[in-house]
Length: 136
Image 1 (spheres, rainbow, N blue to C red):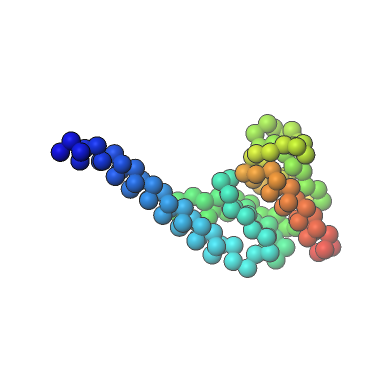
Image 2: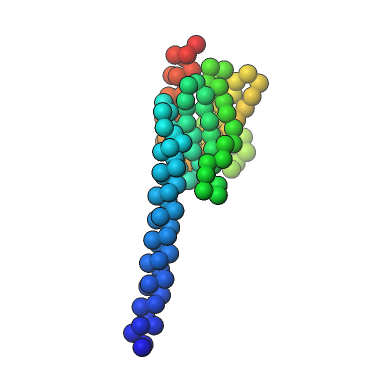
């Protein structure tokens, strides 16, 4: 009986890890459906974003589905800034890593798209500017 009680916590950890893995797999499958047909798409810990037909849509994963946070028309893009995530209006330096946000500015509208990785945000910044120039 003592051996059975020793294995019980391991069994509970296994069940917990299995259920968390199932939830992550479900989130990724929903993301694939949501981002289908997109020219550019990302999913990370800070949310999901996709560029489809000249429209950038940013969403977060809540209650088993993607909830749209904001939209931005890439044709109206004037400026993209790489900003620190939580330090107000501080721009991010080229050497910085970690969480950040892209500030998209155009037609009197500003939106912030959060990223979990600064390198990926820089890559998106270059691709969005390239796409905005192509569509002009």
